[in-house]
Length: 383
Image 1: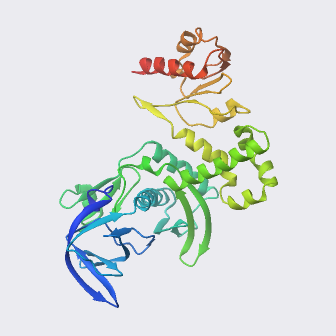
Image 2: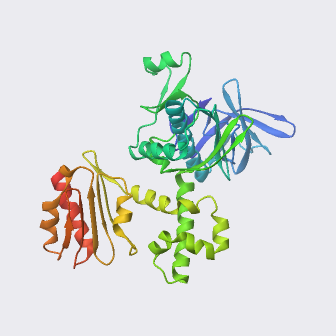
Image 3: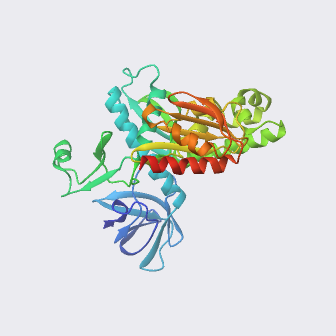
């Protein structure tokens, strides 16, 4: 049997033929010539269908994937279809679990194991936990975000192409997954191409269980949907209380106190609203010769533009508000494009003050046009 997902992790449709089938306990067990499905006892979500028949469960038999169905197939040739939402969700959380394994092992000497994904949560078990420092959650989220932002390749090597260094670490293994500087391990499961597809990570809760410490987390599209859900709620409240969206975010605790339903619905994430919003802005980075840039026109007028700008992580951050407020910050003063600001700004009525690494001011013209022209000049200078 050829396991197509090992080489084509994003493929969700496949036409193949039945190779072997039998009946056990009124259920049909089938082995196909090729498959997109993978057996994992810790995945509790329906992966997809075969000729519109749901796959009840999957298991391995002598290295081959057995597909269990609740009724017979009418044809020898079948159409396999993965649930695309599940598959994307799995790839993102599976990559997150791989990164977490590496970070916990490398920095704390803790094993992160038993990755489990259900419709409601993703979690792992940490053991032993006596070496975890007090603020490990914040540190893990911060380190994971760096891995995400650098979009490190997730490489998979099959025998005989496994590099010698990895062969020595994992003798006799058929397939190794490897993220340089983060983690490597034997695995016969699919992964995305790079760590950028994780989007971001939030550790939701942790509790002690018999095996160790159970940590629940959310990443990828699930996290983005949570963010979108919260933003929809906040937009509704901003209209209800005649406040701007940014004022709602900055004062969310006050408004959550008035809206008990909202507080209950978002109990796990209410303390993270600003962080989630910052994460989404951080995802808008572009890279020029290794220099990260966030250049963005905000949709709402913030109460304090510099407070938001100071919390974003990039080599160059340029923000503009609808009213024409401008914020610019650089990590390295050698990157500071002061001449460019003056060059572009003189055509837009720019006024403001700055230091070696920061500038704040206003423009009299359309801030969107100003940002576009400034970004073009910065690209010319960097390139």
